[in-house]
Amino acid sequence: MSDTPVTGAIWAALPVPAFLIVQRNGQETILECNPAAELFMAASSAQLAGEPAYDRLSIDAPIEEAASRARINRAPIFINDADVCTGERPPVLCNLQLAPMNDDAQTLLLLIAPRDIAGRLGRTQAVKAAAKSAIGMSAMLAHEIKNPLAGITGAAQLLSMNLPPQDREMTNLIVEESRRIVKLLEQVEQFGDQRPPDCTEVNIHDVLERARRSAMVGFGAHMRINDNYDPSLPGTWADADQLLQVFLNLLKNAAEAQPNGGTIRIRTYFERGLQLRGREGQRLSLPLHVEIIDDGPGLPPEIAENIFEPFVSGRENGTGLGLALVSKIIAAHDGWIEVDQRPDQTIFRVSLPMAPRPPGKPPVAKAPTTKVPTAGTSGATTSIPTTARPRETR
Image (cartoon, rainbow, N blue to C red; front, side, top):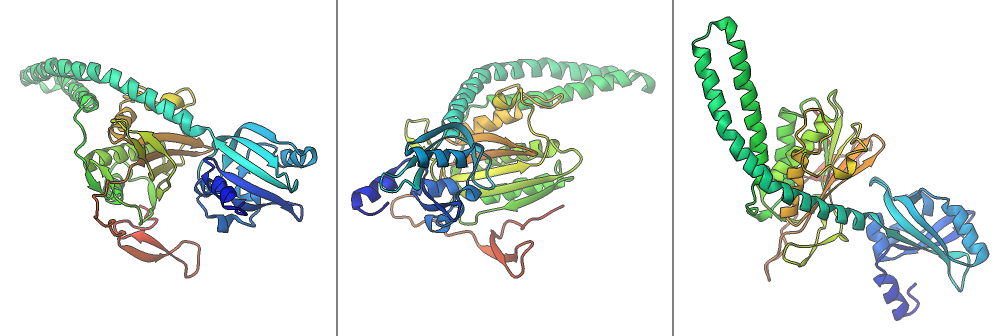
């Protein structure tokens, strides 16, 4: 694809993943791919060249039959709404195009146009609008309800002082239930807090480790919590305390989805490509990604599309405010949150911008790393941040 400067420039500038695929020894093989495909596959062109195409690209469609028809008819083939999986990440809904090259009909051009980002971005905007519409109401109700509750609690406590021990059960119940409602209202007040985050440059792994340690000694004590951190991630521009609240909420959801124990995985990685328009209209890149992955039963299908909206919950007695608050915090940070579901796996993915770099200031050095053995290998090592414990379990 780089025979001439113009051809090479067009190939590199294609905004969608593009592959040249050739049939060798009866197997479809990747000949070359463009930069967008490298990002999509999280692998370089050199790594992918010569690899079996449909081993690296799992496509939920009769792709080999379509390739054969494209070669025989010397005409392009279009496949809409096919799930494409590139490895560990969940499937992506895509439109595909297969077309034979003019000079060599045996070589096919495969274009993959992911559809999920645009659709999910639209849902994210809807979530933001729903959150804003509930903020005023929630703050007002929380304030108005807490005042009479304080009176009810005080009155019940005064009554109990003049009752015999056997008759105090009902007043104790009033006090306990009033306190439970106050805790709920405090959540509602948090949701209604519209103060902007107090942002500084934050090492996201420090925040994740604080959340992981809190989970291990509290609500997640029955879980195995493993980590897979990319130690080279630069800092993000965030309010560390608010991010901690986000990750604690996500870890708590994952732990509550598996009451009998299981595994939660925390993964971080760097990947360019996702962009959003910021609150001030500027275009922001969100290359820092955090995934919280659990092996629980997943979200009920009837609420999966609306899980970040206020008062939507998949748990009995759930308030439906935890994930709405998470969504609100991430939106205030000009970030993006989404949920993906695969069989026996739920993935919450948070994407955040990098911290701005003042002119002339060098990049922050990578986090210190420790070489540790990789499970299942002999002598192999992997680099992890010193703040993280590799594959730690309870």
